[in-house]
Image (cartoon, rainbow, N blue to C red):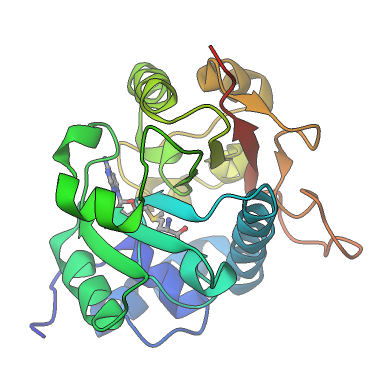
Length: 248
Ligand SMILES: C[S@@+](CC[C@H](N)C(=O)[O-])C[C@H]1O[C@@H](n2cnc3c(N)ncnc32)[C@H](O)[C@@H]1O
């Protein structure tokens, strides 16, 4: 595989999670970010543990098909590893990460990886969508939308989540997160996130969910969401939750 000359946040996360699918350019960017901000390993471990709890909670409702947006690297406790009975379609816009994901999942008949712009569900190949998320639009599914809200403005995020609500069948569940204002006091680290990066307060994020209704667990610090142990003391960088599509 040709080595990319630009880092990706998804592959930096793979590095922080102890995965094996990143390149020197990603490691250099991850180290530079930590130099400015501080240790990231505990924060991303907690975020991935939240993904695991959210996917298990959705699967426990009887959901056995997942559509993942902004998927990044499909390893280290990712959706198909957490829900081994389910089928999963991972989607992304970054071509290098898509090729990486397709190589990792080659040979799997339960999980696939395809191009998909989260802001336009029509960009996903319908054949892949219906193969890995059977009954899309007719049966409840899990929609995973993690690490994405931070890169979408309020208007785009609201429209995107509303279109997903309309497209998904009643009973579908959305796992979603947003970046808190943790980086506000660190201009150097904030600048590294790029001009599109958006931090939000809980009060600013909640209305953007529109018709999606959070479960009784709420949208809270990811370390606290259905935490099975005393939550570890890590910086409060991400809030998240699971929201359900009603019958309307
Ligand atoms: C911060 S990473 C998160 C990766 C993964 N969800 C995780 O939690 O490890 C964000 C990913 O979203 C992808 N991305 C950005 N904008 C996107 C869009 N409009 N549609 C789909 N993916 C997008 C990026 O290429 C990047 O891989």
